[in-house]
Length: 548
Image 1: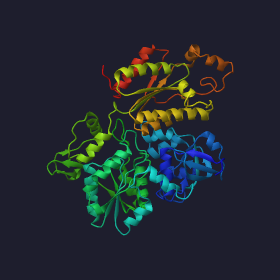
Image 2: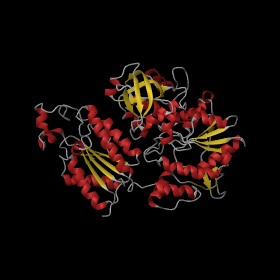
Image 3: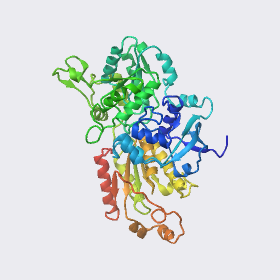
Image 4: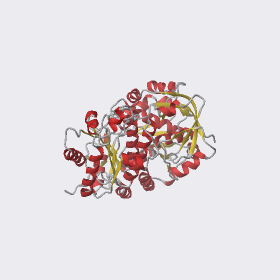
């Protein structure tokens, strides 16, 4: 193996994309999209050859790595542990317009949409090229370690489904009784020979979703509700984009590549939910888009109506067939509230075995891991606020509190790193990784680090949220002039004399957060007042176990 081959360590989303490119689930794609394909997908939902394809499949790179690559070069794609997984034959690198991509794919550039926020925070470059396994057997060895034992490759599912109707059902949530009723009804309509493919996405989904391991336990628990010979559970390592109608179309094409003949499409498919309006996309927009492209799909969309529970019939029924009956339902928000409060959940909503699994897995906001990330200029007051918050938390919250101060991290975890953009990014990545581990195990991490670049902070947020933690970004927005006047370590004076290169705020940029959870200016408030404002925010957000 050549020592000068460039290496990209794959994120969780990129890892899923590589898996599905290599196993044929993303056919006809054989690699990451070039600029012409990216543009065609954005504007026409088709590849340049005319094939229907609604979602860009791209591999993002930093400035430094992208500028080191030339056409024809090999880029090694590594798993998180450094094991080589695949190689990419570089055809080109290009700088996409991320905001335009968000507007065309998601119909919005509002950061409250999780898919939009992810797009806008990606590194600036895309690299294109075909992808192939690094060595024979690399893909299956990695899959055996990373994915549940039920995982099957597309060709395996196609072989099992040969000659019979196969109904695919996509979900990112646990299955409740409404889902069971819907799939049972759809299966019955296809006849006795039909089989059901439960094909849940187990890659990154939406922050706050139940983790994949718990969902897999819940999926296994509902299998007895189906005839044993007519159901197949196979998790799909798909990283959802939460792109609503476009994503529904994409999901159908992926299931076609697995040999499915029919695909269930719900009323709000891949809609992440709007914080104010309830949904991002119009009701049934996903179904309408699939109907529009039915002739090109190669799979039959099964457009199911909305179901609700009839106490009179003791069954789930389509709302349109209720005939004035009183129907019951339980929203996802209400389910989460009841789980957090350990309140009763009616058996008509979900099987008891599923509820038991969810109660074991679900932690309310005040029991989940929490990361409070203080970002701002040197001498802005980050460390002071973080230390004061740590003392107050230790008196009011039962979770273990860890303070990750930027200067201390530099001496231990990031010793040897300099202050180039790449080294700064690596420093923040290391801090984010440690914070995500603390959050994964239900602790609280308080990070006080300048963290000057938006994309690095966004990556830290992603790591924490994928670990099931809550991420609160606090911009300590003390003005540069005040920070320079304070200058407790004499760093600003040295930087202004030219003794320190690339000093944030003087000779290197600080990219202010666009939408932090909280913005504090310690030049306008006493430290204790700033702490009180932060404490009030955390209390009202429901993330504290306050005992006062």
